[in-house]
Length: 301
Image (cartoon, rainbow, N blue to C red; front, side):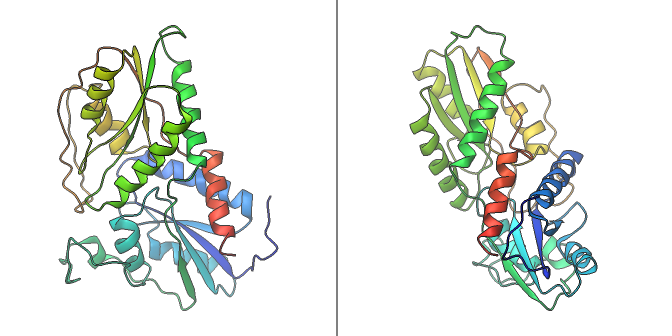
């Protein structure tokens, strides 16, 4: 177990996640939490924004019971890029001021059924410090390269088949996600000698079909590795993106948890590529991710 000499036993960590109607995300975040605790020895709980349990307020209650004289909580959003959730929703769910005006509701008066309206208040008198998102760290390139290697190991084509790489992420009404993807891809492109590009699932461009079609038109590729730059599997990685790639014949996207910060309008432009498409797992509880989270926490201890 790694320890930090500056660690006080009255400090705890909340790993903040979105929450999902599918079980995969909870399984991944449970593994992330267990690995994080093993590396740090810090009392840690997951706090979900919505849908899953425990909620952020519930995570605070768990940590209060676990840590005697708990005085400080470090809230670490396990999100790759900043956005509405990290800058507006999570601060408010922690009882803090939002970092910017909410474009969904500029006056701050949310409808009664909105998840920010129905969430239970955090009951904690100590200090809560909210960290930023992970951002386009160089270490993410190591994870991406691992996923490329895993995908190519499953390829049915020969080693000399010409390969293209596409990084895909969600997209956002705010510009943060695009800035994250652009900077991460810029780093990846400089280190990769294969034809490559990036695309967004929705809300901003280039879309996944646009990027694939352009990449195929400009390069004589036989196969394409599509890397989902997401933390955990969920509806987007198991249904939405596979549908866009043509893996699924029918598309039913239902978000019963009122995911009202965007409208889930996907670009259904056909993917004009007849070669092999390889689609590995997202980041999940990769040891490199755990090291990133530990480093981010240690910077504040």
